[in-house]
Image (cartoon, rainbow, N blue to C red; front, side):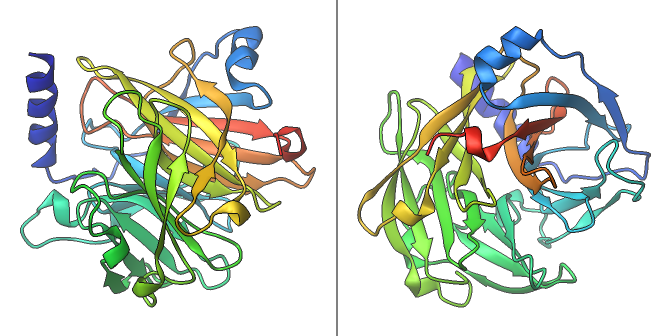
Length: 323
């Protein structure tokens, strides 16, 4: 009965077309758990603030990817192909913008389901990881599509487990991870592909590898630290109705990714139910002048009334993360 309920909920929200009203973006501060509880789960990460984001309508949300923009704003991208560019509380006075990045004439969510995103800081080019298409859509600096691909190296990934996590590394390589695990119970191994460059321009350059992370969690986003290491956001469903989630943050060195081999990452934080958690799927990193970095997390509310769009502001000193 629980499986049928989850399937029905997923089917109902998959047919909706996201419409964001032109309301004021609001941030409601969330009371944080006691400091010792936070430290017990997050280790070197400090949970500085957490907010519930609203736009006056329950249809707002569905954000599965998050990018940091040069002007201090964050760019959230939904699995309906829409975006929200906003300034977090205390970071500036820019007005929030929202709209479509990609559309499908038939309003078919499977054609616009953007689950991951990455950006070239030099050119402003953005790449979207498309879940059902097992491919990529590339957007120019004006956020208009100028190319797409469906690499053969990702063709065998499940229809609903495509490029859930994806990143352009500082050296120009691209890494994409499948959400679908190879094991049924306590999964920890996922398919990954590394590209020598732009996966739209060089789709044939993809080389497969195995991602090995914390057991029972699936990768949903990645962000690179200034020192080159990569943080991996992971998520699992712990209760189906109403949906309840837990998460993990892991760290790995992308220099160790080799074709045909296993890339191991190390767990560094637990997003447990004793903290204000939801379905966290988006992560972005913003460096600070003191050597520390801000790690932003955003949750996907799955376009339902029983979940929330949460924004976390974490602060960490990369030197305190394991090598």
